[in-house]
Image (cartoon, rainbow, N blue to C red):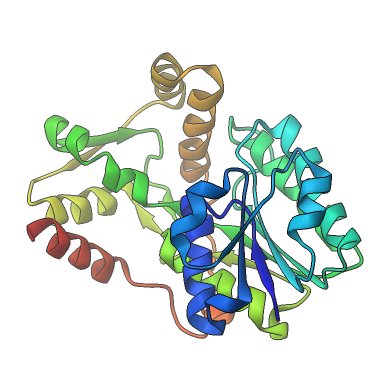
Length: 285
């Protein structure tokens, strides 16, 4: 089996390459990247593959059995066409199976909904491709909250519009493990999985982050519109609306869902107490 992982120079793509290589060995992997030099440290074969260049994608997929399509980062109105380029290139190259990294979230009524809608369209395109397929719907990454450490510590709080809603967070390494199994085990063919850990509230997140950082953090709930305006002012119209839409979805319960992680991987998602204990240990070194 030969497996190609697209967008392999990104954080999620690299995590999937690493986890899959641990299952099948690095010789079975091809890292496909728009800028190949950025993927050279992954320890596997690297090929050029830009979502906007169908001919290049077809060359990248030659001799490949299974392709992991990492959802693109461009605006939603561009992503569907780019993803279709990947699907068509895979079919033309004789690929047997497609695995897609989709997202969870509300398809309407939030600033994040256009991204969810574009992902649902690609899910439909993958299912209609005529190839074997598997789809993961990612929970919200917890790493950005960790990376916001200095700001949280300076403010002594987390403030957003999620209210008392619970969010099924995840981490890139845990997603890497899940997609490694979706890529390599036909048991998962023609299945769609919600991939996340135990849903937690922002209050719990603040407590866990505070313990890891060695400080006291509280949670302050904001009005949905007030938070949107704050995010737009800092991040711009598009990204600000997307971030605000995620927290609006958390508030509405869109991310408080049963997880299929154990069905995909054969073990539970890492517990948040374990994750934050490891984080604290790494920060204390």
